[in-house]
Image 1: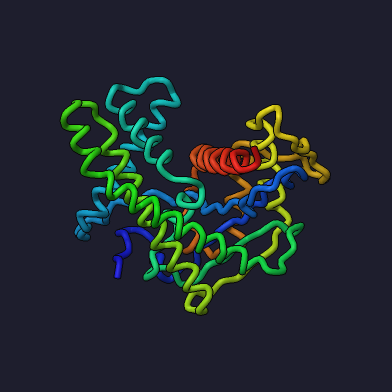
Image 2 (image 1 turned 45 degrees about the vertical axis):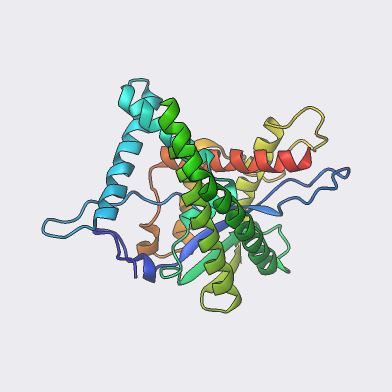
Length: 298
């Protein structure tokens, strides 16, 4: 069984939170099968360094060091004072994100089968709860099939890409193909473990409505609207609630508030608390999901 990172809460004993974010209503002219909703797993907190005298597994140390370099590079790039190494790390980080669609991104953020004990799925109160669990597992099963197909393609292509990389001296294709392969197989494995765990009741799952998630759904509608092609006949987003719509760090603060309400203190420590990082991550995932939805609508 996977060991808990030193200095971190025991994730095997903590529930995991997931947000269901509905896409806008599809145009009446659209006949394509659209994804029913976007799945968002909040950004995890960075791994902590071990306490003095504690041992750290090599794989965890490598992951922790990469996280430190990645976050430092992103901060330097955003501040405009990144050196060549930090710019390179920033590019690799973005490229790693490009290799995953929104569903694989979500699956790569969920715990492994050994660590997933309880799943809390939060959805907007305006969404009908009937059949939501079936739709949730259907999305996971469909993504498992797609991830396996993509993983096979990436695995078969790996030696050819390696030869191209070696002969042309052009760095990047081999590394990106490897990232794509790993993300695909990880996504397929997690999709199977979650869907099977939920269906067999091995994973305790609860679907909880929360009105505050309407804010994130509205932001997703805005992102879809802002990135649509002129010929896409979709309705402009409107906000009908008394409180003003939130964006940026205010929306990130709402994500933290939802985590704090639905999880206990120990579980909350799993997630990123920096509002700037959380805000950027949420926007990135919403944009990725919006582009996928728009591609299906077009």
